[in-house]
Amino acid sequence: MSLRAVVAACAIFALASVNANPCKPSSSSSASIGSTVTLSTSTQTEASSSTDASSTALISITTTTAAEETPSAAAETSATSTTSAAPEETLFLLNAGFDNGGAGWTAGPGAGFLSDANYRTNPGSAVVAVTEVGEASASWISAQLGNLVPGQEYEVSLYWFLDWFVPGGDQCTYGFFLDGVGHTYAASWINGDRSLRRISDSFTAARANPVFEFKLWCTYFYDTGESDWSPLVNAYIDDADIIAT
Image 1 (tube, rainbow, N blue to C red):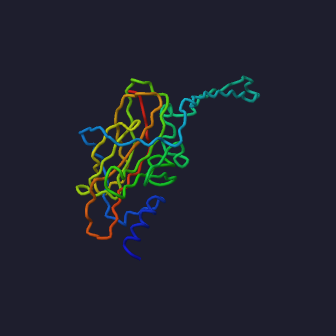
Image 2: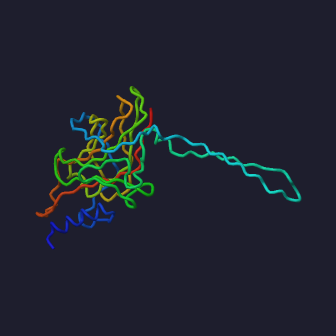
Image 3: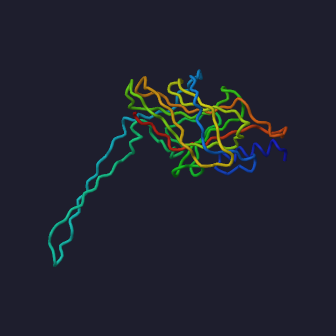
């Protein structure tokens, strides 16, 4: 089997939740967010499917149970419990944990959703994979937000780790975007670390239901010395969140 075929198989294994680390020198760990913030001119791709987050409501459930009468006591007792049907984060972003195959999210080129691998909280996660250089070859995921207040400032965050990334060699950029406008940062990692690290950004809402997009692209891949090597950098993502600040 040619080396190029082996590499292609490794990429498939990565998206199928199989650890493909042996196929490329491991690289990975504590995320460092670049301090320089630049405005991206990338074109926003609207999510093909959206969910109106306003339909999510907190449901209060009250139950009352009468105790059976006993010889020693005939008093009736009751118990009341209240539960929340959804976490607060769903007020703005549905399916922040990428459950159910990434329902409510849209995956761009090289991106997808995993049911049982590389997650921070069980069971789902997302992956974006870059195989060509240039922002035009970016891999991305996006989702429709809801219930934002125009003019209000928000913080968006997620947890990720970079795989097959060569520190000091690969040059990659990630960005947070709303309706195609956002901020970008230089990607950095420590070789060998596969723990998910939190990254975040802040924005002021221009409208109530913009499209949120997270993108990753690379402008240079380190030459590993393998002439048939097909460059590839993966980022595994979980537990996105948006809060008002």
